[in-house]
Length: 528
Length: 88
View (spheres, rainbow over the protein chains, first blue to last red):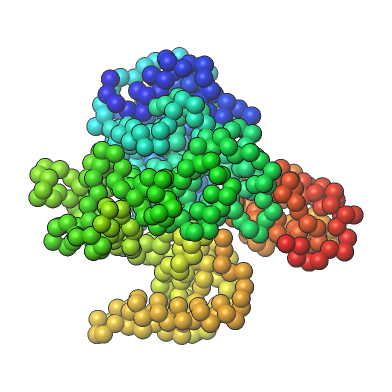
């Protein structure tokens, strides 16, 4: 059998059938149960008409049922397409249409968010109450005798993960079974994942990073504890009472965990079981490192870096976190990371170039987008016949070989763990009848990566009341895309004779305006 | 205004939620509040009702519905008289 997540689950269900695989509040499932549920889900999906290679959307809250559905889709040799809950209708429509999904699995609670797509895809309930209008997987599973599926090879498509690009709509990154299996083994190797691990899952299963905690659990026979982070004290209680050993997070979660506006219960617990915390998706600030070290003195800190196109590129050896706190480390096992100049030559130490990734985790490209695929997934004369990921990110390497992130190559805004495309924010803002033009950009805020800011001009040349504009945007954009700062400008500077908006100049004026605004108001407008 | 009305007003104004705000509705499960807004929610409750919430009070189970918050405020009520507006 080829290397794949379903294969890992079959193996572990045979080796450790009665071990608890996953815990979610009061419910838990053993590896055998998880395996049976995944197989039964696959069988139900086939029954409903899902064929191998078909795309299946999953828009669910984090529950054991969500894990069963993800695994079931993989067992059915269909393709997992995660859809972030609470996206707006137009964002979901793009993913549904672009992926050409044949079915969309959701919770009974959020059926109303997707019911509008019933004419273009089959809607299925993956968690929650029976509703005679829609097939219900937990109910159907009771009447299905699971059977094995063997029609998968590791080159088959396993998932499409949508991620915002610098221009236009989000692009779907196409991931094979082999990519997932290799990514699992590589991460397990450097994190030392083992059967004694109790992994805390605070991340969403809508991204490759969060999904990897499921794969780690299945691969090594660990136990996964699902947690929806709301208030940090609940997480601290879970870490201590369940003797959690592994805590994968992102900067935005660290900020929430150590929110100084709240009284934290960190002092009243024993966290000595915690073996490591790991983080990716943005730099760890001095304060974050300090909070980790004082709260979890026994835990190693892994600082990691990657982009979905190649899953993960680097990690910093935890023993180097004090000597190289700002480094993103070195290449992960079985991969190489280069710093190339514009001619494709390797940059000497401390010269900034583009991060280029070579190795096992290079994904298959962008779904139905040969043009953008050709830009990022390219060959290099040194490696004939191979595809490398040209990330666009600017990095440098020091004399010892440690890599440092310098800047992103695109205009993407990275906020609260999301990649936000300025064009998407602008497109929504200019739909407001009184707004003429808009330019969105990033404002650094280490707590959340960056805040979204947006400068705009109006028909009347008067500013719109901020709370009214915010209300409008909240109704039309997912929360993470709603600008934290809205800056009204009387007019926008234009470049030379081309008549195009001078984005650089607009940003500069907006930044100046923002500076005075902030001083004047000294408000709580910096959202954490 | 009753405590319940004050809390309802806050939720409606801050989140734009237009659905039914039953006192027992789980605000997190129904995604009225998220992990960002629940912190604002906790701070609003402290300031508006002049109570000081300790680490053991600041858990999901105490803040996830209007009725739970009212119970929390009641439990803190007598002890908190005379405390400042910004206890933190």
